Length: 238
Image (tube, rainbow, N blue to C red; front, side):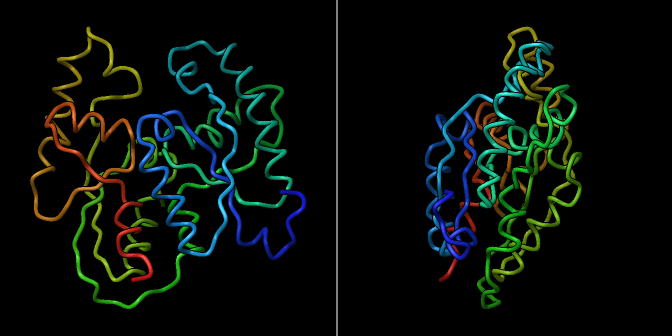
């Protein structure tokens, strides 16, 4: 990275991997890399390192702080090379600008962009009228921590001549590791049915930004939702 010219740095990104898209949704990871290449960018993969999010969720704050300090320093070394950092899963990516900022001893953890934040600059304006109507069901962490995130996805789709509307949804019921625990199965199902379950069969393909949300939908309905990135790749540079 340090050997790149300024022009090469402007057309390069570092993909910060998370366990979910790296190991359980590898085709999505590959789709993002292909999209970036189509847009003229070179993608460097940051070495995978667990960022400690599950530790924080479960209250193991000491272990989380150690993981945060380790990862924060690694990310800063990458960012110091002048290349933008991008992550895919919102819950795992936003931990760097939320929970990490509260860790004592961790200074200057760089921003890791959400996909739509990066696309707002990287995606060129395309011809209008490509058709297609889609509905966004965003991760609740993403909506609350970055209120502009859903609007950014709508703008990305509009730039491609596609219509995207954001559904008013609450938690899908997975809620981190909560929905994985046997004792919470009925409560998780009830939460899903009260919000997400009522939105899936409306007109227009439903898309979901969160890995946990897509997993919950598949578990509850056997439907597989796509990530907005997959639609962008489908229509990009046609």
